[in-house]
Length: 194
Image (cartoon, rainbow, N blue to C red; front, side, top):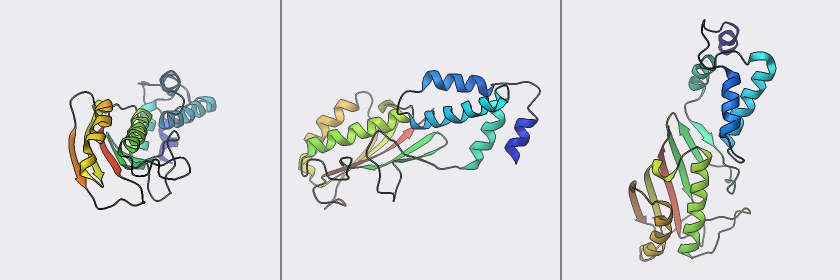
């Protein structure tokens, strides 16, 4: 296919060798960084196959066109039910699905308790951001759904622990209920990436 031709006939000047990209990812990635780990693994396979001197830019153009919306699944937070992804990445934007307070078995954490659920949600959001190489400073929009607006003070205490700099654009709405009994909060994000 197209990628094989690009690797077989590299440009005259190698701009960024696969071998160097694999080394950089090995140095930069941390345990649990699923996207970086997958990229590192694929680059190391390419190097092992004798393609270490090939130009990474030959691969980059192909992969960028192969899929515009890339689902993100983060191993350090509870798995989804399979009907949605933790997030979807498109070019330099990350859209994080609404996060709710679930344990590893899919049960609601602390039913009815805004402070505990907010802490669980923001901890998961923090892990998603870290997995994608982002921080709270990169969040451009946060949307919060709560079942009782009178509990926004408890929510605000937790939110301020994570969003310490300039706050992003924000919408907070009260809803009559969320999709499981006991849930009082759901939060989604839009994030600007490198």
